[in-house]
Amino acid sequence: MTTTTTTTNTALPLNPTLENLTTLTIGATLLTLLLAVLGVHVYAAGRAQRRALVDRLTATGQAPVTGRRRHFRDLDRRLRRTGLGRRLEHRLAATGLDITPGEFAAAMLVAVAGLWLIGHAALAPFFGPIAGLLGVGAALQFLNWQRQKRIEKFINQLPELARILANATNAGLALRTSIGMAAEELEAPAGEELAKVADQLALGASLDDALDEMARRLPSRELVVLVTTLVLANRAGGQVVGALRNLTETLEERKETRREIRTQLSQVSMTSYAVPAMGVGALFLMNGVKDGALDRMTGSPFGQAAVIIAFGLYTVGFLLIRRLSRIDV
Image (cartoon, rainbow, N blue to C red; front, side):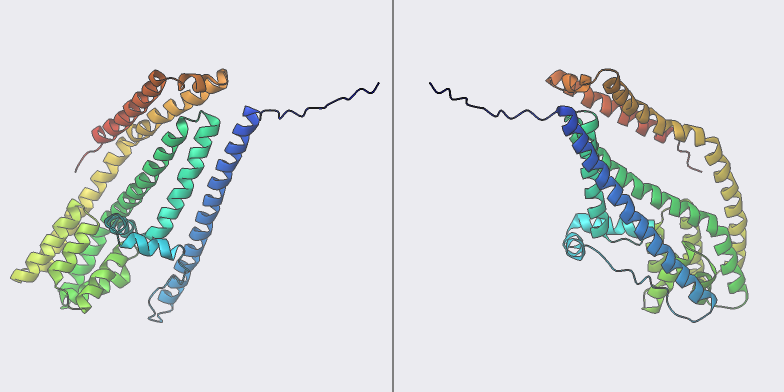
């Protein structure tokens, strides 16, 4: 009598913890690659700026060119044809970053994918899309922060700019020539913006249009006052030297006032970022105390609605704190 033994192979289900660990590793890898690419970009931009500074100090007269190879050219061309791409290009130009719309869009997509995977693995699958949207908001907020930082730096250079223009005009130079001289003497961002104005004037643009375009790129009350003074003096032929010297003193006082206000409101500004960070930290704490708690909470429509409402309230709180802490001088 022969006994036949049949062996049945059953596929074991994949461990959920291992699956989450794999997804978390992939998300962390994407973010690490993004940071590595950004590091290489910053290093290349720093070397290009160093070469430009050496060329300027040696008075070779060459224009500072970066020579950096552009990536994602096809994506960049497609973006520039759309209204969204043109708006993005304008915002990038206002920040002063040496990056194309295609490169920024590619970096943002990588960051969104990495945050999506991390939110999916570390918290719950429901938080993946939310983390991706937060990545988009963080990228746009970075552009706003970089633009505001450049505007603040430009405002701090306005007193020196007005002083140079006043001295050059007092020496008998034309206003167009004075702007070109100020572009050579001042550092970025004032030097870069004035160089753009000088290039536009050399191509035949009017002084009013060139200065107005600079004011649109870097909107601020101080720059509007300076541009208005220069335009009126150029049209009416008034005493531009006296007006610029009075404006220099006023800009110096406003500069000190803005510095004091920014120092007083620094704690409030940090609070606006701490409030949403506490909410995200509470989610990680809940999931750490009881594994799978967020999965069960977001498994029902009521739990999902509660999470969306909570994120909306944190966003409103962030915006309200930022709005109340903003003081226009």
